[in-house]
Length: 277
Image (cartoon, rainbow, N blue to C red; front, top):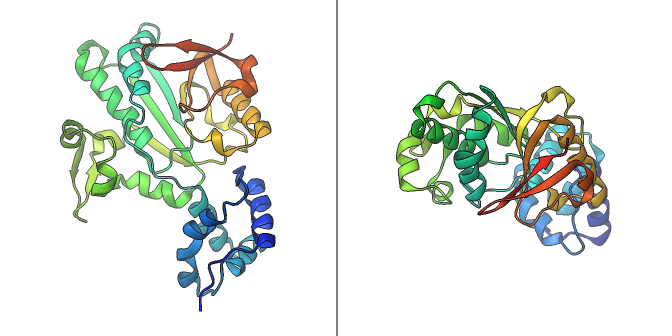
């Protein structure tokens, strides 16, 4: 019989382990989250209890299992054009301003999850270029990173089911930017996929090898980190931003932990943070 209960001791050890591995802080009484995310691995791994799965993961002897567990605990399905205003600002204000002083624009989508954010950025850039024919010479490079190598492989393929496509994607964009895939699902068209490169990255590690960026999207991920780690991540992002570079955070997030690095820019609608000179 399979036992999906998580004992207090196993949960305590796993919480510590997960925070050390990827910075995610599980709150008290979140055993249900562990059960729902990891329960499916029991049959695949021929184990009879969540506690045993957690013990084997923490031991680190099976790197494949460790990666599966981290993937399951850190993967979050997201939306196309989430909150809409960052993409509206990108098309209406930010890209036109950048286009007046440079031709090469670098954008980083940190913690890109299932890929909707970087592909939404790419579609926004294409829409800006289409609406501004003289802007066609702008070179836009989008880097998307995530901790989950398995998720990144799926992102690169760019194939999405009907449930994913229904979350934030208009009928016009669906028709314009997607094509039929052999699986019966829809795939992001090659001209959009070519704009995005994917790379595995742990936000707790160094970003120096990524180079400088004009815009960083790090949205709805800081909420999972402690105050100390938020500060570290925000400071490291600031170090990778070009002068006056722009940071977008999630609606419930702020730069309070590293306020010395940024200034808030209020827009209508929404807001972003600009790197202080």
